[in-house]
Length: 344
Image (cartoon, rainbow, N blue to C red; front, side, top):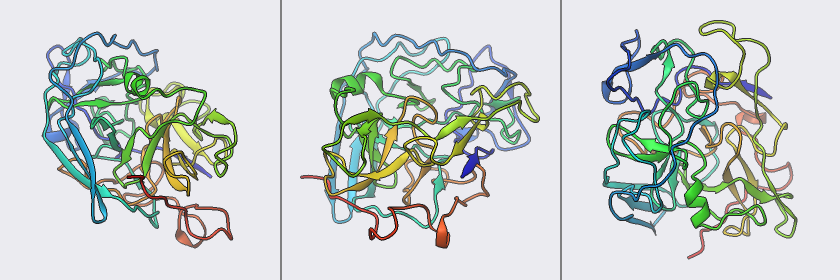
């Protein structure tokens, strides 16, 4: 199976500020109706991460609990680790405490269709900070152009700190990639399965990088799991032109079976927290790093839009389907998708 990103997904984090040409494209602007920055960059570049040398402005406050069929989160979104200085040259905003309160399913189920990520964060970390990978940065400032910049592609400097994070106009600090210092605090290493690092908006758990080599066998060795997304070959057919090098999300396509994970950067597996098995997402070293689609049914983690529309190679609201119109699950003959209970 081969899928590619298309316009209309991952529309987050507009960053208008002085000294940048602002454009109002024919389509809607960024979050809150803010105008989009006009960019002409066409090449991916190495990201220059801002060192995390500053203490966050305030103490981390987060509570994750459970009630009936929901897992609850209350958070001020202040990280529990050092951050880069904000504002900085690429990001003009200051970190400010928030007042988030959300519920996600505590007993999630695989949905009939994959939901691509759009105007809502993918999920939240155990410290209450959002995993929010998309950027509202488009070729020529036009979200209808079909070319959306990849936040980790380096073509557009976004002022990310060494946690691959920066700040939204609302003051919300959020992760665009691997949360480096959070993983260090959780003692995540190459030598053992990742600890659980968060929850997705559909209720399934999130891990980082390392899982069991055999997804069904907790006694097997561990490995850094690979995404099944790859750069397309050749040149972009229109818009910015140039080679598919990772500057834009449309430079990537999903090639089923080329890595360890599915289109949603997840798999059915056992984990230390779910020894009976679950569907689980994994952050990866390579694109998409943070997943860009949901296997389950996500709740809205940000006001102002549905949890998903448009997305990789499909019509709005539609996802790729397996036999019978359902997404791929466990191997035939093994019953329903495994689902564990979070240990109390």
